[in-house]
Amino acid sequence: MSNESVGLPFRLHAAGLLLPFQRAPVTARFIREETVLPTSVEQATKTVAKIGALAAAGKIGLDEANDLVSYRRAFIESKLGTETEQRLAAIERPRPRSPAFDVTVGGRLPVMPVRGDDHAAADANSAA
Image (cartoon, rainbow, N blue to C red; front, top):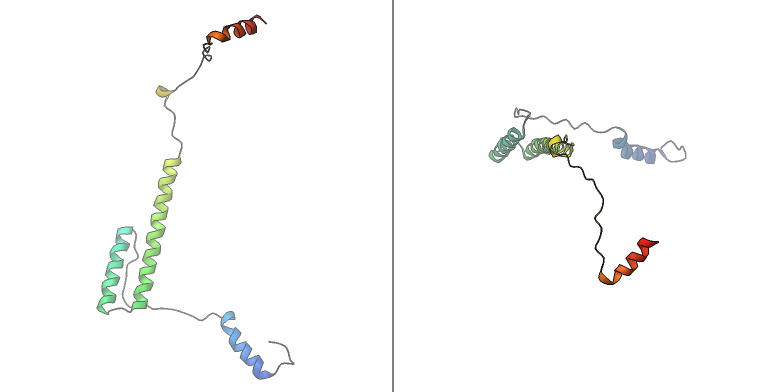
């Protein structure tokens, strides 16, 4: 606060409350276990199982395990989404037409038969 009419204790208190919004705290996290970044969905799934085993054995913390698993899940979801988009694009791509199956429609519509009592009306219309 830059208002001089407000007392110094209130301004200091307000500045302390607003400081986290101006300068974000550094949240660096160090991973103790060396992990390999996955290149396929199968590898990421195996790594998730390994991380779960390490967390269950108490070799890594639960927060660290959750972070590592969430990175792998994000990779799996993005990889599957990309593959799905590629499959949809392949399906939606127009296929070239084969000349062997080229169908053409020609001719006129057939003449509809007329009921017995409509002959007089049909004759009158054809005569006109």
